[in-house]
Image (cartoon, rainbow, N blue to C red):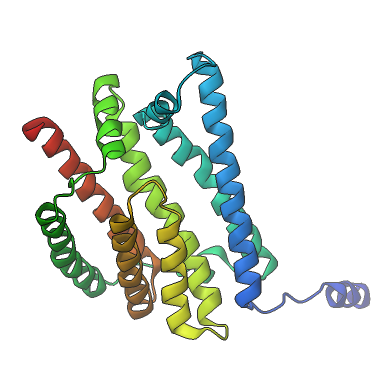
Length: 259
């Protein structure tokens, strides 16, 4: 009996070590995750468009208005998030790693959170001041439209969840979690792990004008630096959520008080 038990025990393969994906592996899995995310977003949009029965002969302006409705934006963001995170989880499983460990989803150090908040307290008002002095609107038009339609339809809570929770969690898991871990362990090193995800993250925000894309890139650099300092992606998730919450509150104030 003991001989059989020993042989059966010996037959079980030992778990392999956790080895982060390199540059190309990280890039390929990230591309797959983003492609799946984009496909899911498109599918949700088309599905909502068909179910709503708004008609087939809409102008591009009317289609844009439909896409900027709070319900459409919220459901697109929320329903696409699990698909993107699922691809990342699959990549981590193939690397024989634990999801939370690979992505550094650990308790955020209070000191690093305070440093991040202090940086945001300087960066965001400075950006708003520059926007004001240069004649730009403080809130992009499609964001204002999303707020107004959410307010009028009673779905601000859904919009808030999508903007403050779903989007920050998904984006930080991909860019400061998965990409940072793989790139930092590759030939591009720490600098590449901070700069490359920030650039890709910024470019993906094509709905904004160039100035806001540059601002998003700068935020990405700040988040990447804090990810490195703290060793925690949770720090950047919380700060990303804080940025989006501040933006939503600012939108509400402008919409209600100054429109």
